[in-house]
Image (cartoon, rainbow, N blue to C red):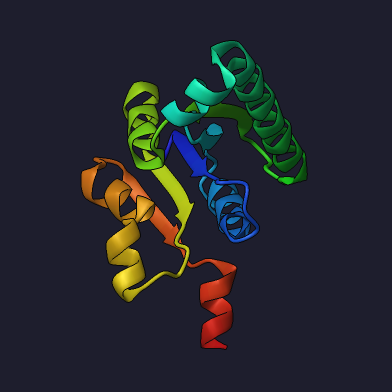
Length: 153
């Protein structure tokens, strides 16, 4: 049914709530490839002016390495019977980078967490999940974050 699944993670405990659902989905319909993606925020112009480009490139490189290490640890925790799991790190605005990744890599199923924001907070901050749902041509499975689920229990 699906050939490539993207699991979008922001390195938070809340986002990791999707892993159980991603595992179950990938194992139920053997999905050949599962990609893990974390998007890092770009370095702000004010930081470049204060610290200089060279130092900030070093900081960005270390942040990418840490994010890749995080995804590698997540990959080792997953129990996927017949899926190849790959890890990717992007830099930019989260929704935009997720959508670019979907288009560039032929993703047909996206699994991501909601963070349980509502009302003015969601309106003001915008919702990465909502932007992905509205702008993606792929199937998007939204899993409520642990915080949202705990609020219902």
